[in-house]
Image (cartoon, rainbow, N blue to C red; front, side):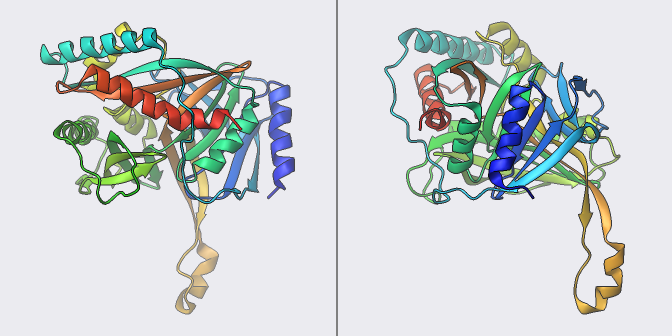
Length: 377
């Protein structure tokens, strides 16, 4: 375990040398881990059989890989100075009327397409350019401070540029042959209590669509051996926002991570339903390329020692602690792409037949405050 200063110096050195790296902290943890690629070769994966860290785009056309075998893996303990609360302190700027009109027109077009019967739901996103005087690592540290319950990361690669994010959404976690995923949808501002959150029929419907579609895709791709288990929907907090979540789990029918990822991505929460129709509408009608926004990222096939029960009767088994293969992959939401002096922020929302274009614009504005809060000191 390195000292924090040496750890961040190593990241800075990789940025200066234009070498690929990723550094990240998992939700509710205080250890930051990094893969520092040792060479300048660009690695990709198509079958997700390698060990390392993957960074995939929305379209599913490019999955960049930092292989564990070609990296120095370092870590540091990093305690935040702020209390463990998530914030969105940001002074709203004057509304960009042109951007508002453009997004509302896009939403109206999406609603019309849904009412015509072509889709049930589509997720529509927009991009904002925001100036910032902070360095990439300063913004990453701000995310670590402000979002202890999110997966916080900085990814730097010659082919993608620098991306930074704090995503609340797990795409899938796999340990041995068991998988866990979630259906996350519906958004409202957090007003001091989770228990008193009231959800509209539109929001409940949106989240139910997400749950149903994920389960159907898992069945279509024959991912699970036996039953797929679902929790009851419940409210969760992410930053200054609340969402509805259902937990979904099961046992893999085979050791095929690629098949599992193909069944899940892109989820109805970032694309829509039916998936193919929604994706086609997004690629044809959104005003900017999503690139890696609403793609996925995370550890794949990393070996981890699993300790056996440590009570006295099991002492003789301690020598037989097993090695298990684990993958933990997140949806790339609440993220930005950094260029010189500027941050490109991506924000979107789910559209159904009951959506209102003005309200959908307002939802993207509220979501933008969550990520913009880290662009200022």
